Image 1: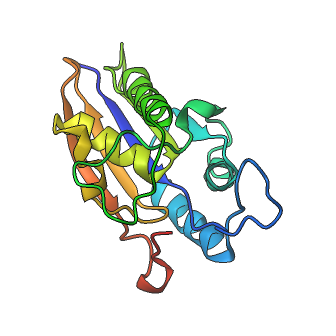
Image 2 (image 1 turned 120 degrees about the vertical axis):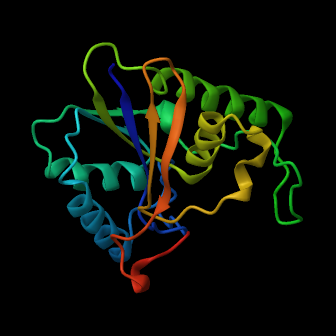
Length: 193
């Protein structure tokens, strides 16, 4: 029976200041570029069939570094994988900024659309897909894959250029194979912003 293996990667560390005010966000920092290169080496043994990436700058730059090592693998950039707030956390902290109900509803709707689009069984052969996206989205997707309340998405930490792996079985059930894997990054290169 065919399985879909989804490799969920959070983008590398990026310039939070975004001094040029680009609506696509800040670029990767030198540390973020190095994180992406180390991640790429880690992924080389995987028979990737497709790379999907958020079209925000930090994610796109991370995915493009990976894609150079997989020149024959189709590469798709998409807005559906943009960062979002997939709903209010169960117990929002005081630092959690206020978001309009409309923005929260849009974030949850898009996050759910991502799950419905990518977390489905492979049709014929096993399929290995890379999704380069954002921390909040990955945490929501992991909650959905495990069948846990999605309001718990903020209970997990996820590092830059970390790898989380989900197997979607032929019957649609999901198994989390790894979360926030950072073994490919030496301690001085690990970051969460």
